[in-house]
Image (cartoon, rainbow, N blue to C red):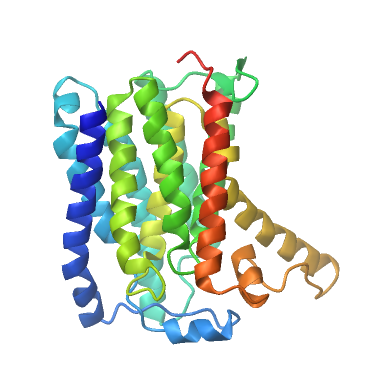
Length: 329
């Protein structure tokens, strides 16, 4: 398994990097430039016009790696890797539609929130239905750290899963706000899933998780500050779907609370800001949300935001390991 996972990582790095060399000039040629929020940090205006939808490069790398390195698993009848990638791809499609709308309107506004939410819920329910009927998940919900299980009624489980998936996907989307941030935070997350897949003998899941790790490493070369390309909603929603799919494929969705700590702090900062703003008729808790912008407005440069948030993600990946290390899978 170690060799398969390592090859998956390397193949994804190489394919993603090669695709990036051709994709970025193409995106520039078709003028697929990012529009920057009017109320965002003033210095972000310099990023206006930077190519977006760059997430396509790591998506291609992950697909190629999954289908090639995971081909023996597919031949043996284990389609878990395909299910995971297909689920994430549907979220990427939703993100692509969002990016397309933004490019067409030449502003940082894409699909309406209700449209995105409805599509996300439908996809989430369909995925859980598929995973349940292929015996990849059970309704015995694993509780990390406590190392026990609680039975959840199927209907409640579906509601729970839809809430977790839509919340996580949108939280990952919010994290993609400064150069390299979403990639830096997500690499430790997928490295954690790769490790757990190895320990529990889930080859197909591990191949995908390793491929995502490799694809993001390659993307980071192009996306690190100053970014030559942004992943766009195409990439960030793909990553959100991927993180959820890996957690559910390993039948431990609650680990998203710790492994996705940075994502949820980002989302919580937005919820707190909006709620407080409405209740106080204009007052704010943070200088700007999501919270990475608050730190920027407080004087942190993008290198520091990237370094601190990535380190926090690494620490919570380690914590997550201790939370599930005693699980009998």
